[in-house]
Length: 196
Image (cartoon, rainbow, N blue to C red; front, side, top):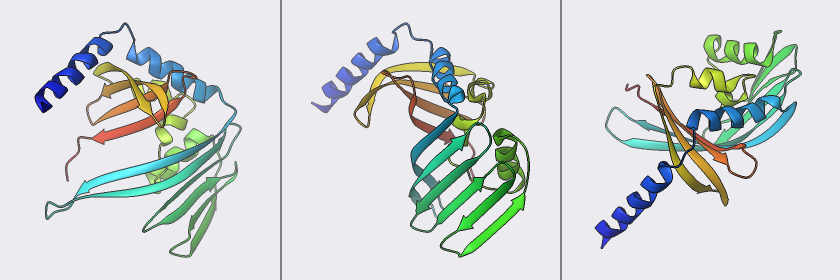
């Protein structure tokens, strides 16, 4: 009985996946809408998985938000069992707040949102959840190293019908669900191929 159920699921998925949808075009249109927005507010849910040296697989869950103003400024917030952090940029200063650790830091910095996000992640080791989607030209950067692409049909995400695309790259594979109604991203998943 379960074999028949699996066969039906794959049979339906194959028919939908063969639809004439261009995954890269869907990503470009969706992320182009984000890039065109002068400001945005996004609620995020983060699930990170890791395998400990003993072989135990763990998953940490966090929630947060992103506020971004294309004219210059952003705020990334994430909260979980072990952390409550904010990283913000107001166009001239970057701020970091660790509520649980009772830490506050600030430093003068100038540049576009993209430049400051790069400095924070590459030089300061900051974690800005989902930042890949918030660059001024996110589609170009994300699609640059894609070697394989797939459209897997429509799938429900939080009650909305979403186009489901999968992209394969040398270091990571990523999945993007794009709302059929407004073409905005609904869900973004990154799978790293890096093993510790």
